[in-house]
Image (cartoon, rainbow, N blue to C red):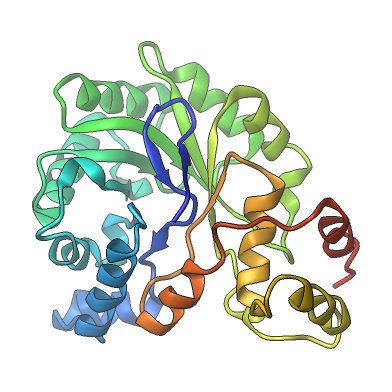
Length: 282
């Protein structure tokens, strides 16, 4: 596995992480019935990634997967793993942020969270209030770094300006070969300000895991050049090859898929192949 510095943190994380949003039905069944569907398989997937050098894991209080992450990381050195989780937008008042963080710490069975992110912007709560709580959590050692998720450019700038003592180190956005909206404004801003981007849905809900008539010829041509890489590996490497600040976090729910994702790192697409992929019309 290859590693690179995560934004302004100075922490080296794997260039590919593991996401733990499984699906809406998983959340509902877990919340109502207390059942973690495919629990053992999901833990096995996370452990396979850890065993092969992936040290970046993303979760959230709403996902109902923080306990799975806690189970998966047992036996590993905590200071070598970078755990990111998120606070839900209904918990953004000062005291609620602190309480939500403490609950996440309990579920994760850890003393600190590496990256604590605001999951979605909430217009009803002043960002200054939320960020004051986030900075308090850094002060007392319960979190190390502050991030955001699903913020537009204006909201991102406001979030950054609302911090008084610490930097905004990351944003988490939907970004893949099919969905490139962030390239218009958020990506250039993050490059300029060294804000890391966690790219979720990097395989576009599985659409990029298989060949499509729209880009089949281009993918097949590229596959031949790089040792018959799979469509998923090419799509993930496209993100890695384009920008150093981007860290794709494909879902880790199946060891087979995690093993495939591992082979997306350690090589780079040529500039010519990036141009070919960029010009695909979907």
